[in-house]
Length: 248
Image (cartoon, rainbow, N blue to C red):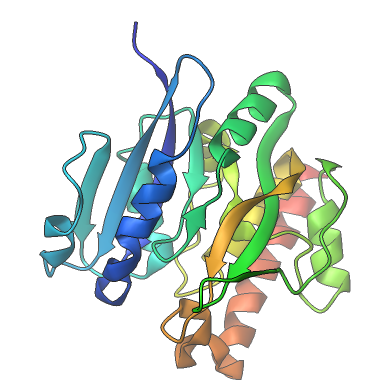
């Protein structure tokens, strides 16, 4: 009898390849409920071919590559190869904490009305220490439809939960068209859209070590440039508002 799967999707480009071993190690430490397994879809954003050679020999790893289009495009291309009924986000420079996949799976298996989960985040500092995410986490519990969107619109486009911790039902993800084709903020766009269509759940235990380092996407000029940020925010907001209007 085949196992039920959670598909872990990781977009990567050359500067982040050094961190893949840590991401893989965090996956190998996961203890999943009986009858479940994971697959790791590593999608290279580009075609240089070096990343595949740096991955461990593990049949659960499914590598793909393609023309560079940014992380949103890489994630969605990887989704085409995913076989799991659940999809978990894992950026190449981050690590899952022990138990996070099990918590995601158990919660979504028990609550059919919940379409996605997020969890607490710990920032991983270069010296190996961790600190709590700079924003205040909500209490553990259900996240009603539209509440994330309302918070984001009324709090200077700030999210109350971290999109890098998302675990989402594959069918919901497909219905939303995958990730937005943006150079950044594609995960924010997906989280807001998912919140329009479905209730979520916030897990209070830390689920991710979010690496802070100079090469991370959120430190690059293309991310912090005000005009570029304004353009991304506008299309993310317009999409969320359009979905709200369609849902009535």
